[in-house]
Length: 614
Image (cartoon, rainbow, N blue to C red):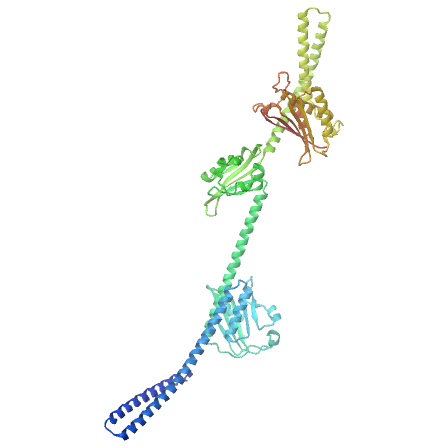
């Protein structure tokens, strides 16, 4: 059998064993010799003592020689231990640098560059690169490099499934290449212009996944020791873990950003909805209360957000939200869904508000309850418009009937009145004259009704008939009010006029303006028999038209009467026809405007007219 070549460590060990045996043997022989001399010295004279002293000196010399040789051997052992400790410190320092590089940054390129520098320092290499697949997984991209020219790296394209780098990437195994052939393009590729001689390609693998490849190379031949390979493998593993963690971190950041953006878009969308939104969580806390909900109810979001919706009834300032309490409670407890329902409430100013709403419970993806929501719109104007249109249709039909009735009745009335005049001629009987007077009074009253019916049935004046004018309200109202007060004024009655400057002219005839406002002034005077204040205001509205308010401080209108005041032939006056306000409303509606009334018993009444500008 061929004898194996003795290694350097085995030779040194054999040599140390030889000296150990030699030293122990020498000490034993010297001890035996010394013991014999002492024994013979007890039997001999002076000559024996000289021999003994000589032998003792020889023994001391042997021990000194032994100690000298041992100290040299221990110095060699200490030097070897120091070298091993220094090497371990170096390796620990390299690992510490790697850990620091991984933990100190989330910049993938900076991290890879730091780890690559550690790998090159460990192996004494001057050329290296870290390569990761691109987003499409077709080619490797260089994320860190050292020893290459920038232009060479910038144009580098290595398919992930080809070449030695592709083999290492697909297999996950380490490849060591020695005695590499000279690269003819070394001057264009490497900074120092020299071609590498030894190369090691290692896969960046962690958690069962290969995420890239690390390559280091030296221009001089290099034998990789087992310790170096282990360290390189650990560094590659740490870099792979760091790359995976950075990728997960980036994905989590994208997810968090997407969630934040989604939340922001949702909140912005909810805030900009033309519908009011009230949203509560599963415990009943108000989470959303958007601007439109605030506009409809008159309640600011900060007054309700974070509070329990069940406390709506306990807080007087949240009275406008009380009708929604039962709706939200049914959504949360009974999982009830409301579609296109309506409810009536009052806003903080006391104005009656009709809302159309949808309400529904909210659930998480797993089906667990997460709250409820109410989405509502203010449809008061729509309802009022519908009511006005219905009333206008009714008034139109009633006007046509009134016109026919008036036409058929007016002529016979004049005939009856004429006959009554004839009967008075030559009549001296007081009883008969009294009866004839009653006939004349009743016919006159009936004629007033007929005249009112004819006014009620008149079609609106048009521009084509040239009877509409552009009237300046401040001037016309001031003149009309002055004439009215001169005829009907009382000492205990005060008149206030408040007109905004620069009001545009309104589309209305002189007769229409006189009929409308004379009727309203008469009603105001009738409501203030003991005196009071009559106020006439005019303002420009947000939509560019004009709003006129006629306010009195009279007795007010009873709640049960208020809904009927514009109904034809409805009156609370003993001598009234019930057509005054009906005619006023019809004229204003025919002109495209609107009229509303607000009244409180004992406080007064306000008529609000919206007139179109010309």
